Image (cartoon, rainbow, N blue to C red; front, side):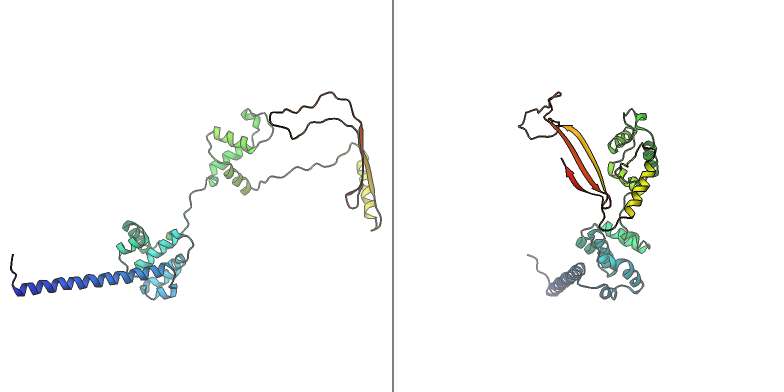
Length: 281
């Protein structure tokens, strides 16, 4: 067993105790810093309270760019704002990365971009290029749309979205149906139902229509103007349609049937209110 001189042993003991105290103080400081970081992350401090501890030449940009990010609903942008806030408050790179869950390289990259003046770019939304913004794709879509389906071997006179999508896919233009709909909406196209309008072969149709409308305008609150028409006769027999049957049963309707009677429908349309007031079978 080696015997140390008492003076050397005292110096060694003092050194060990000094290191132990320094280590304990460092742990206590690190714990305080972690608590402060946690309180900042939880929103216990307002931007006005934090800006007092930010270097003076960074305070304006902190309030403009970083402070709004601390209240952002997106965790992605909120973490970026926290990284930059901790860096401005003097938190070392390793502790900053460990607290947020980023690598040191990521923390260093964010701090470098901020120092180089990319203040707004760090908090801009990440946007992938949208396919329906591609001009070549839009031109190809409308070029195909303005061609008849028969040019592609389709026995139709109008396009359906499924057919248009399949033709574009065969031509190598990859676009989904939702993007096609978005393009149509942006160009002002929309779907609507066709409406049938009344026509007549009567050469005096316009003249008679003018007389009817003139009469309708002269009607009082107690007057009524009816248009009566009938439909029929219609034979009473079995007709095709939907019915409830057991599984495996194939319902049929005879092509030739004896009529079980005839039906005539008569209705009266009150023209001033455009309502059917009488309906007779």
